[in-house]
Length: 115
Length: 130
Figure 1 (tube, each protein chain N blue to C red):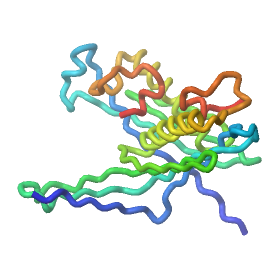
Figure 2: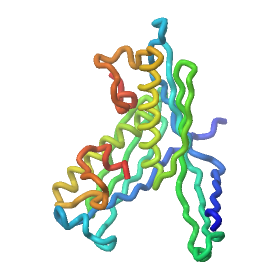
Figure 3: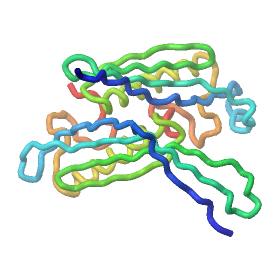
């Protein structure tokens, strides 16, 4: 009997955001920062493929983003791109600033995962 | 003042991600595979009990990740601390990818020979291939 392969779960990652505009954000103290979250799950499927999904939440808005790939690193890379883009777009639409305490503004999907 | 004491604890079952095989042509033009593998799950504990004035400070507890990368007989491994697994994974992909590109340039290797554009940035190595 072959043991079932467990899902690979990565995270959760806290996504810091702030409601204050522009220059005020950098001066905001910790109490004014809120957190969204991101959790990634990878599962082996037929023919050696990997299925991956990201459960993501920001300011009450939630989504599940899915992708498939040939291996775990390909799937996690694609999930980083997808969820990073979703977070940037969602933050923009809701007037939020991601990682306002960082050195540089978050403008590309990969930036979401630097800090 | 004595430095803080740090120790590492690996879990019973660390998470191993990969390997990802990355095709390249060696100096003789033969097709080979480089590889990247990441292991995440150790926690690094730092206690300040030996530092005067900090005896009652709580333990620092960081997540730790390590990657291994190999191409054409050259190997490198590096360990990072990070806030979470996704953060660590992104760090590992970044440093492993940059190292692969640099090693390939120095050794006269061609990464992703089927790609229409030369590999100059690390995300190219991990993006889906057509």
